[in-house]
Length: 636
Image 1 (spheres, rainbow, N blue to C red):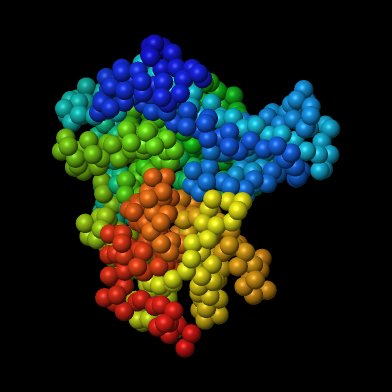
Image 2: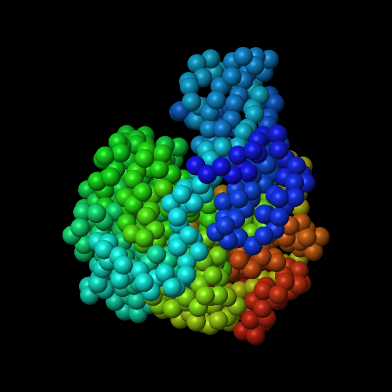
């Protein structure tokens, strides 16, 4: 591989060492291009890794006690930092009994909860006894970083410039020069008949099949609820089923396992042949979370994930997995060009280098088609290093290409489709995000029986307008064991609304309600409050989470607790990308999860100081949808 300056960066390097080096600083401050592509992105990765290594030491624990649950061990941990926990799934840790460093056990983080982590050890802890005390030391999972560094090197070797920095002049000549068997005529029949009534979805599928953008990636700009995953799945099925060539091989990715599951469920929805589709999970995934319909298509074998031999994997027409697990295919020496098509759903969520793992070493740029779908106005990648963020690391490949396509006048149907029909939300709920982020281009096309089901609710300030902003003047609170803040007054108001919903709307159950709040401690307080909401609902699966956890979700009713009651925390929040104030992407996610009813609880004066929340409050005022403690008539 090509030698780069990054090979000289070792564990002894720190952020200050990098920035004191003039060539490094110049690379960091230069606009990204193909000439500096490897060096700049590798430097950003190192800055992020340095931050993570420094920060993860805070989670080392002395005198820790584990609780054994089957093959997993639970470790209680308080003080996780909101949406930036340094301890992540797959991270490596070592533990040893207090006073006995020689008896060291190694394991990995299986899952991260709000106040605990589940750990799977590589070897059996034969001498484990309940109550035994251990010292715990966490380390950053270097494999994740190594895969991204390798992808950058391979991008240079595989000459992916035409994919990563596309130019329309390449595409004009491309169809005349190619003899690729993947060049298709447009479809005339769809598996999902509903797509036939959506001109933009149909257009995207036609151009993907025709390869009209190649070698440039085809972009599907999918605002909330517009069916981008349905579009991707339909295109994948058309390519897999309407081409007789045995050379067709499709890699379908998404940043998270849950998003991969949704994509795969859409692909196999028409009882797709099990010999064609393979849902490949990493070995550390939780087998209990595999959807029933996907088990027969997956590498799940008796609650354990197995990795088939290379020759078996190469037989499948469609492999669905995360980019990191796709990296294993490169490790197994899959030939460059084996995959004729690479689809990446929710491409705006991941780092550019994460997306690259699914491309570099697997795709031949002049014979393959890349399709990216997502929404740059929704949440992007999580970047912890402020310096890396400042220099462009949080810009996803999708967002960067959309800006590039705009600059090069490539926003035309042969390269790009913007979906416009929103199938999720009531028109009144869609109004503000549509106006602020999508230039009024979205059309509400949701099922009226669902989207209008709460319009006559007795507790609405204005009948027919399914939004409420309830102003609460609470207090920001903290507990000694955590940096996370909560607001008891808002929590009580949220619980009050949940009770009203369940008592007065026959068509609403706990599964229909989603509660979003930006802080983990507020999530915990609301969950505790829900445990006492009527005995008949005690065992129901309440959905309470942070904005990040709701990014791929939707519910008939969404309640929001914004938590802030003063401006004191806002500067810190902006620096660390916390909270829902002064974050337009979080604001957009929060307002676009609800189908039939949206209730926001927060401090009116604090929220009005934000330009986006100010627009929302103004909209609610114009429609008589604001309540407060003094004018609350919802109990009458």
